[in-house]
Length: 220
Image (cartoon, rainbow, N blue to C red; front, side, top):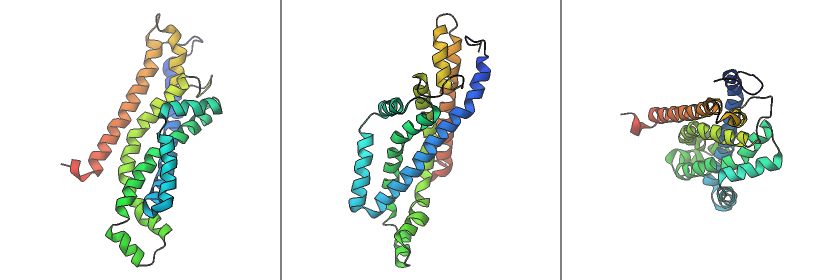
């Protein structure tokens, strides 16, 4: 892959950046999924004003383009890995809340939930024991696919200088640092970009395989 302007091996820096990018992507998707599942399950189960309030806040975030809003929040917070994660968390959870709400709306009328109510279980316990566990599988599949998107978004923000700062290695930053060599040594910016593409594609394939394994319609 060559070396950068300081003589550092780019391949080694790509490997060194892998844990950072993975940590960022998994944190964004994991925390967003947890928050979205909780809010969506509560909204779908209780309905009424609670559902209306949570969904209007969700719609407010979904009304803005995700990447544009993430860039705006990241600029306001300033550069850095922690701020990059926070900026993405602000815009990432609404999709999971929508998915969890849709599942909770169908689950709250199911027979086992009615039986739990008849047995005297509290509403909080019904959500924790019956709604959320039965709502996780499809969201887990989507979350696996979404890790690739998180890596792409993180790389874009890092390319804009809003992520990891030198000398810390990060894939998007490596593409930015290598673009000055584009006409003389095109492989310098291309290789980190290719790694980003391949990793995002790999998580998409993992998500497809997970869907095939968990969804009875695809098992044949």
